[in-house]
Amino acid sequence: MQKLTDVLINIAEIEAIAYRAFTARCRIYELDAQIKAAEAALPPNQRPNSPELAKLHQELNAARAEWAAADARLEALKARHAGAVALANLLAAMTQAGKDTQALEAAIEAALNGQAAQEQKPAVQPAQVVTQQAHPAQTQPAQNQGNAQAQAAGDGTESGTFHVLEVRESKPGVVRAYCQAEDGGKHAIFAKNGNAQALAGAVGKKVLVKYRQGDKGLIALHVNLVG
Image (cartoon, rainbow, N blue to C red; front, side, top):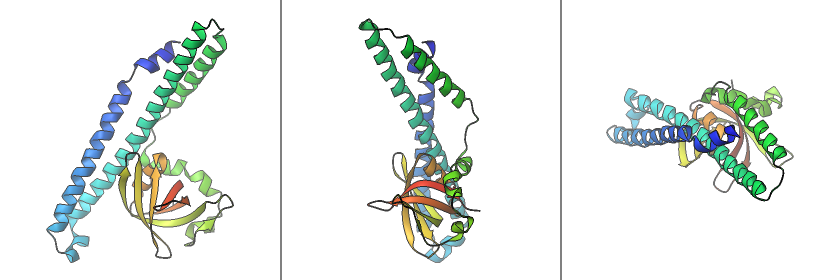
């Protein structure tokens, strides 16, 4: 049970990722304030051609992608730690009750070994997440990627191609992407975890999104970079 103990007491990675996410969020707020100040100092017709604003927007998108990646990793680490606590409590309860814990210990060992092997894989960058999440969308015919109209599925979800105009943090763990469909309609698409990373790294590009309707916009289920 050494591995279970290690997961329980080793929170250094959680602290490091939490600090990384916090730093990225602070950078987002800082850049957002700088952009607003720069926009206020320029006439509206000069803003689209401003090199300073273009650079600030580029840095802002990079900071959002960094925050989305760190936040997703933090949620995974927190879930792993919470699971380890639950397993430790169950093991302690069975031990106190005088029950045989060999089967449970073997299951815990197997689970932690599998988790360790998974974590040894190279870290996924935001741009790579888009490629990995492409599989559900790739089952659609190729011509659907260029279709401006949403494609309805039998499970109540739809798919459509969108141009990502801007991505902002909506609330901790969730981003809101302002997108334009190929028919010209504007939409707010909400996403978290890997889908948030994909949208944050696709500003100025086209994405194929499988989504469902939400109260305030579209809820992204899968995001795939087009082209």
